[in-house]
Image 1 (cartoon, rainbow, N blue to C red):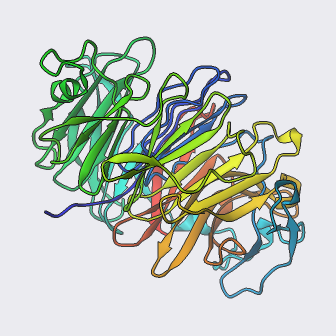
Image 2: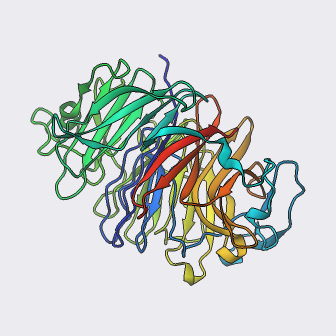
Image 3: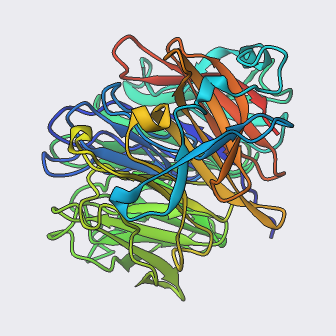
Length: 489
């Protein structure tokens, strides 16, 4: 049987000050459930995160270049040498001692805008964008040219249920064709909806009610969106104590991921169990999670092409990681990286279902504490971690905030991409995408343009192409929409 994977990107929503925001979806990922005051929000699938002012981080899932947008006063440190292609290396300054780290960081004389990009205009990368003519909440790329994108969920007037329009491009986003209007069959006005294009033929959707009480739906198409089948009752019965009676309440469905040919569903705080299908949704069974939800917040799936990880966060912001092994979740060999030890209130992560790496970005909640900042990556399912980016403050790093981080093995070598807002020596702000093939010791600027309400992220497709994605927000930073892309490498 042939399985498809794709590079997927999705959007996030800013959180209220008291709790975590909604997580964003990744490859097979879903939007998250807002957290209580002590919690990070229930994250989405494998790839995106968000920090609300005064709130905490909620993460989302694999394949989603949707990463953190930080308030302007919570700057992120980072980096090492920043160079342009074929340009000499710039000076560095060693920092990170507060975290006990011996890692190079970007010095004051080697700031972002001072590096020369490969363009004649070092900050002229905006000319490369292929404009969509649409605003999308989520995109899945199968190659440089073929991609599927869905709009934000909306109320369908004919059925009074949540739905979305799914589009297809065969030329990199220059033109789009409507594939289907997908009806999520959920009448709640507060429900979230996610679409997962696992292959051109196999398309899934999930919904979850966010608020008091729980309800959700799940369905699929196996013919490219021509017809749809609801699987809500089938999955509810698999999760119930008495499968014949079904579930007392419909479960909410936040994350759908595919690893090793099996499908996994996360129900957030609704149940201690996950739903798993070994046969593409024909049958389902429940799998008990390794930790009690009385002690930790709802778990998050982190999926790569090789592994399925579970992340739990405790009330004291400790993080525990588990990896699927022989049908059960076992604690990972490596503990979560320093510097924050048990204080991980603002940790987010990114992964791709087309790559083998998971990247975690960690910082303390309040920048005026003199916090250390650390970006760590694992390429072996959390058996080991490597520091790829670190620092202590905006002044030392020239980095105002990160939007995305992604690490994976390219050929035989690990590579890391970061994107965010960086400052030049005159404090001008630029949106940049950088790449390191040296474990974070040196960086090449691949994309740079003035920061004017735009952000960038990256997505890895199954052919190995890396897509640059442009997204913009509304005036309040509450929603993010993808409106352009191009093949970065």
